[in-house]
Image (cartoon, rainbow, N blue to C red; front, side, top):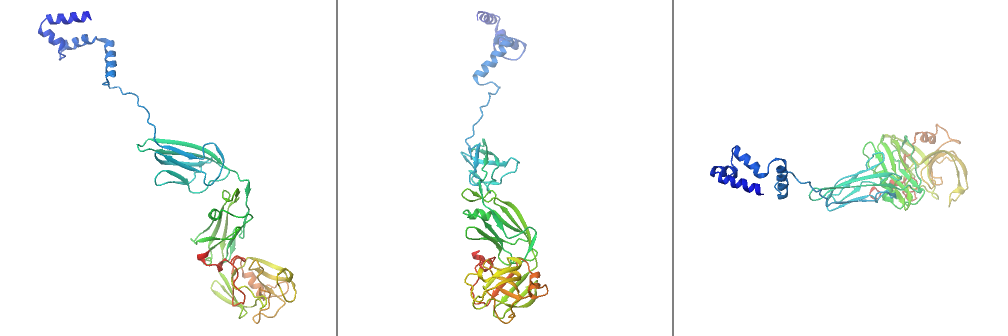
Length: 417
């Protein structure tokens, strides 16, 4: 400090010009030299200057930024590491203090689960149930009001069913059926979650035909369109029930596709009063003499469907509850079943009442020979018929067949289907 005082004092004694040069900070070589001397000069002076500037907040070097924390908090259910997770209803993604921007759920193969973020961004839900026995990874992102992003991840595994139901139906792959075909699905256990099961079975068509399902009790679900199928329609029954809980702790157990085709149109109308059957096949009409149920055992009225073509069937009066009249035990040719309760269209070789009288025990009989003949009325009709063909009976003294008796769902109005 003493040396500095001396230098200043000497400068002042040296005259006004020296004072001005040393203290004024103006231009010129003299001012630059004096400035350096006053600040102490060299590296030490530079360091001191930088430290001073930083301390005063006027320096140009930026301070390190502190990371911002998002106000958004993402919640994923189930928690990471969970096992035996239910495939339906358990997966949920939500956020507090922000809005979801991205949610990705995928299995170990990379297949993504479709889902939707709510309009307000508060939640995400899957579009359908998950697969059973499958590991999933969840990644979610959300942003708060300031755009600061929060992320969350989770992984879990769905349960492997211990109990499964068996489902069976009446169609076979790549088979051709008549225009009245109804797909009937039977379960070996009661179905409690009927809506979920109905959604797990889709009947797809190549021409846009709309098909709906109808439950008969707790174990049977039938599918049909509003009107008879259009000939040539390609149909596929798609089962996606393996991951569907049909009842508490019981899963559907099957994922498969079953394609079939609708063939030519054949609709037959039996008139019990005139004892004739009118057959309309692709617009061409023919008439066949028949005998239907007697007054004691009349045939059901209503629309029925050929359920099966069974060939020669043993028919016994002892197997029919409430059957009256002379007992019988016959090998009946060209038999095609119309109802579960035992109504058939079949060949008849023991009567001559065709076109004249109704003498059967509830079936529709066509002229035939013992063992069945290809050239007979029954033989020709049998050969020309398909499972799924329509047979409608009218003018019988019996009531209308119930819609669940065989494939008789056409007797139920579409509005009630």
